[in-house]
Length: 254
Image (cartoon, rainbow, N blue to C red; front, side, top):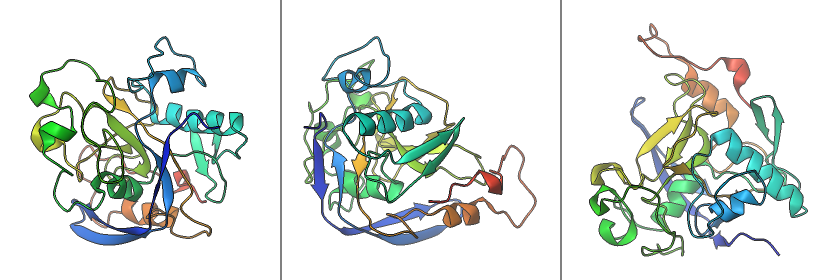
C-alpha cells in the first residue's frame, strides 16, 4: 500500500495566463491523482537522506531535481515504472509511464482552485499560512481548511514545484513553483501567482506534492508539451538585458 494519500480529481478545465506574452488560454485536463498534502519530511526521508523526519511538516530545501529523483525512487520502491530518466541534470518525462511525477502547472492550478474562480478557495486566514500569521518556519500540514477537492496547503505554508518551465525566454531553465509560502504577503498567496527557480536550487519555503496519471496518449499532456516550451523561448526582437533564453536542445520530448 502506498505511503501517499493521493486524491482522484475529475476531468475539467482551467485557464492559464502568461503575463509577458499577454496571453490567456484554457486547458482541458483528464482525470488524475494528486497528493492531499505536500510530501512530508518523513516521506521524503524514506527515499532520500535527510536529517528531519516529521510526518506533519512539509519537506523543504528540496530542489526541483531532488523532487524528480524522489518521484523516481518512490516509484521504484512501490513497483511502478519511473516517469523520468536523468542524464546528469537533463530530465526526460516519459509521459506514458505509471510512476509518480510532479504535477504540470495546469494540473496544479486546477487542483488548487478546486472550482473556485477567485484568488483563493476560501478566506485566506482560514486556508493558508502566510505572513499574516507571523510564523518563522513551515507549519503542520492540514492545520488550515482543505479545498473542495480535499487538498490541504495548496495556498501558503510552502511553495510547490511543478514540472513546467517558468519562462524559458527570460529565465532559461528555471522551473515553476506555485502557491505562496508562510512568509509571503497576502497579495502573493494566490492561485495564479507564479515564481520559479533553477533546477538545482533549494529554498527553506519550497517543497512539492506528487501526482500520477491523467493521460493515455502523447501530444499535449495535461497542458504541457515540449513544442510549447520551444515557442515560449523564442523572442523575435532584441534580447533584453539580463534575459537568458534556454537553448532549443535543452527541451525534453516525451
